[in-house]
Structures are given as structure tokens and as C-alpha cells.
Length: 85
Image (cartoon, rainbow, N blue to C red):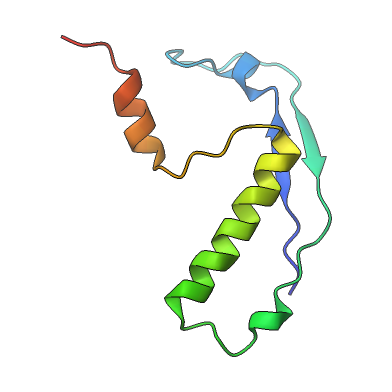
């Protein structure tokens, strides 16, 4: 089954970092071209193949959203943004 990458844009105006309640605003979406992973058929149990598929999807999303891709978990980024005590 093809994977269709979709990103939401301008979400930072709706829910800026640190805001508890979102604002009602219009956000946009960008729909990309379908990604074909049929070349990996039968290799679903290989964790390296799964990582490759994940990376390809993430790169497609990054390009659609025109954002920089950081290969880190969101929780790590949130911890970095917390003010020091």
C-alpha cells in the first residue's frame, strides 16, 4: 500500500510552545506524492528495512514541511527547551 505523506503547516500559530490552550486558527495542509515501498515486500520483519522505510517517510515529511529533520525523540527536544532551575 502506498504511503501518502501529509504535513500540517502554521500549527505554531495555533499552539505555540508553552501555551496551555490552543487558539482557533486556520492551519494548512500539504499533501505529497505517494511513496512506494513494494520493493521491500516480504522483508517486513527486518528491523533495518523498517528503519529505512521510516527514514524515507521522515525525509518526505521534512521536505513537504520545509523543516529541518532532527533524528531525536520529541521528549529530548522538550527537555532541552525547559528552563534551568
